[in-house]
Amino acid sequence: MGALHAGHLSLMQRARQENDIVAVSIFVNPLQFGPTEDYQQYPRQLESDRQLCEQAGVDIIFAPTAEDLGIGERVKGDKGEGETRETRERGRQGRQGRQGSNYQLPTTNYQLPTHPNYSTPEMTSVLCGESRPGHFQGVATIVTKLLNIVQPSRAYFGQKDGQQLAIIRRLVRDLSLPVEIVGCPTVREASGLAMSSRNQYLTPEQRERASYIYRGLQHAQAAFIAGKRDRQTLLTTVEQVLALAKGVAVEYLELVHPDTLRPVNRVEEAGTIAVAARVGTTRLIDNIILRDRQPIVAIDGPAGVGKSTVSRSVARELGLVYLDTGAMYRALTWLVLESGISVTDRCAIAELANRCEIQLAASLDAAQPVRVWINNREVTSAIRSLEVTANVSAIAAIPEVRHVLVKQQQQWGQKGGLVAEGRDIGTQVFPDADLKIFLTASVQERAKRRQQDFLAQGQPQVSLEQLERDIAARDWQDSNREVAPLKKAAGAVEIITDGKSITQVIAEIVSQYDQVFARTDQRG
Image (cartoon, rainbow, N blue to C red; front, side, top):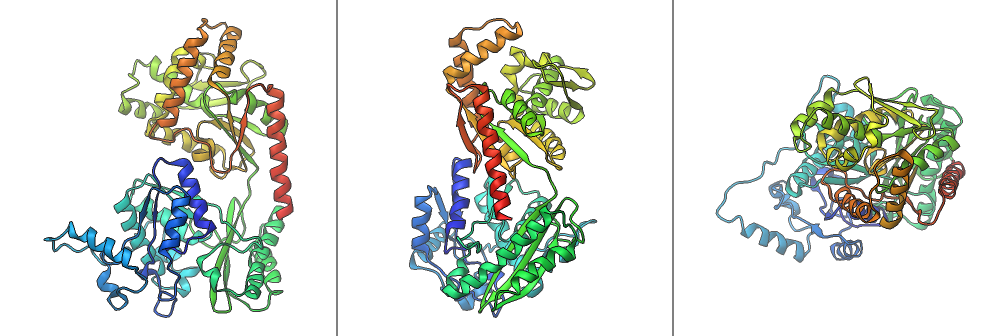
């Protein structure tokens, strides 16, 4: 809604890193404000917002007026409030192209549809919705309009408003909107206070009091790590901390499921502790997600960089399971070729993916430490052929294939305790991985390694020049495919492996792992 800060900047930076074009919407949505709320006072600073967007490399700023979005009549009494001459002029110019048309966008709020296992009030009338009736219908209305107008591949929202994020994800599923909703970690001030445009209402003394909100959540997280799982213990832990802060009036403190927002009595797999409180007249919200899951390490990088070898060794070193996602795509590619299906026959390949069964198992063979079966046929050696290697990227780029295999990978990862490698593990498969690594090396270095691998496996020899051309072509294909292109994940640690031994690379990753969990322990 504008008044952009470091939290919004983090969303822009991640979007910039993962996409070719980045658009930022700025609109103070009147539909999500109640009659006694701060719509008129809400900070509007379009020019400074524009400068921040420019610094972040944003390509497009979408700053519509209420009239542009077809809700002008509903806020007629507030017409012009908060709009600069620039936004009004932009709206006027945009409307000139529609002169002669009497069509008006419908003004009814979007109502979340009912579902056999889903009740609307459980999403919109709990937590913030209890004291802000109609708020989330207003959010859903404008977000739906935004997504329909801009038609993005991905939309980025902060985890700070976990209820809004859950509702938008549900909305997108219910309406089958072709967009991926990406939740991003909450950005905090040095005191731990969650970044918010409303923080500027706080005095220095109030900011200090407000920091107790996150301190309480941290104490609950520490209790969870220590084995406490029941609702009463976790919420009482937060209450005890908040009681130390004078002037913090708690509106609600709840433990809910992060996806459904239903109350949770005991955290089995995941739970969100959500809190809203007023400090002075300023209403603040925050939350923390608790997951009963062992660590996940995501290792991404281009072809031929040694991800499989490194990942297997890292898993063994850390006592985690190695999930060879690349072998799954190779197995399906082998089956496509074996079945005589053209690699361009997307429908036939999608049908084959839905009907196939892939199994992975550890092996004592150092050369092939993971055995692979597809439809009860072992293909451990066959999936490493030149023909499979040449076609696997094209097969992996088919959306239906990715949907089937990513779903299976994520099911395996629900309990964590694994190391996974691929092209998009940290960006798509496990975006909430505890440690993300991006391994890379020069094309020349990777060609030499690939030639040595072929020699060791008894494969036909290929010249270095040809291997370099093949690897460069594969890099381009992986980085430019429409679905889940190869990109360094936000927050990933980049390790350039040229001139380094496998032992050195493994040691570096293990060191990063130790640092991550040392930081986690300190936060708790």
